Length: 503
Image (cartoon, rainbow, N blue to C red; front, side):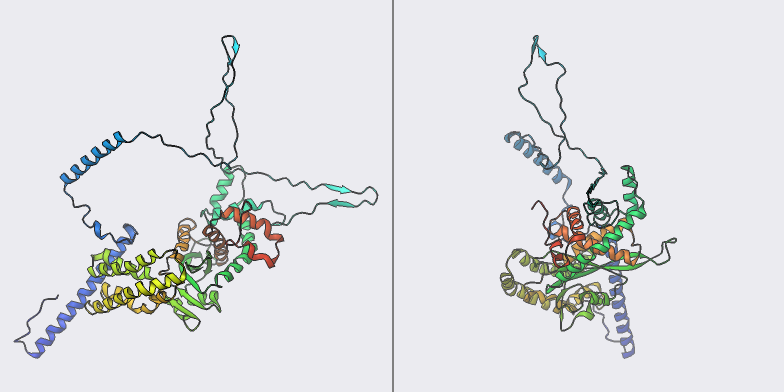
């Protein structure tokens, strides 16, 4: 379409008609390129690998001749043979089993311990350890409370019943923690847990399990409220959202659902506190994010979703995500091998390389390196994008990729002047991944209340995992303490402050 058309010799009307036809052809070609790009993108999302790495040096990896392959294999075999002959033979060493595991000993002695009509003497032993597993081992705790009476005044004394998460219920905090972790961390719906417990010889109805989960969600809610306040005490917050299907009211039989959203909020990646709070809402409207953040002020690191736009103002500054900008060019490159996309990816890659070099550096050092190294790259990239935007057709996939970055340029470059800001929003997107995994197992939430309860429990479980804790051990200990724990010390039970008893 770049060929020049000779319009000399045509009258003004014919020349205008030809020019309109050429403009129409150019526009339709841009539309064709756009549709081809979208089709390639959909195919890649469905069938291709999800990595966004740009392997420009592996472009001709599979173009070697067969003879070259055979020769390379022959040389590798010969090299391996020579190395095997030179290297001493080493026996693989099996790691010992963890010392804290309970052990059960089995004695094996020969049936006859006599020889030459004399008793044999034991001079040692060989020990071999095998790892065993017994699924679904239930233990009954018998709490015997003795009754003591005075023979003179007939006064009766008895130890008081300890407070529990579920009063007069049969589950201990260990069993409740197992149900919660299996449901919200291992994504085992209650009907599957019901079958697992039945195979272990303890049939527990699904309705009973649901009652336990509901009661625990109510009791744990104060911890989630306190965790939310701790997250919003930071001046940099990541935010993201993901869709979750929720059962429509009154549609239990036909199974009709509608789309709700689970929102995630975390402190900035460079902050010391590692935590995430999920918020289950009935829609993707920005009012839900506004209600969660309330009077919070700081820098909000988000994608280009319009729901966040109404939050931006005097109190909240928007920061953009370079991973989203890079993804536009990566998809463009994968779809049609665009050279503009390759050059954009290389320049964005320079920003990420600078971030990798100063990983773990203090804030003042990070700010200095960004000013000295990232600022020139950012300025050069903007000039390059602006120049190339004039060379691509309107409405094309390349134009859309460039427009995304230029439209969000102010938000994308906030990180250069703020050392506490990460370069992208990947930190909170990683906290969304467990939800995406769960969707494949539980398919939908039973109600809005069930979704909110799930968000509360998953907030505690995921935060415990972020801080290196076993979520079962954390929930068990917290639910042991919570019934008699004073509200003034509730912060001590938050996952990022909690310490296991062994510590």
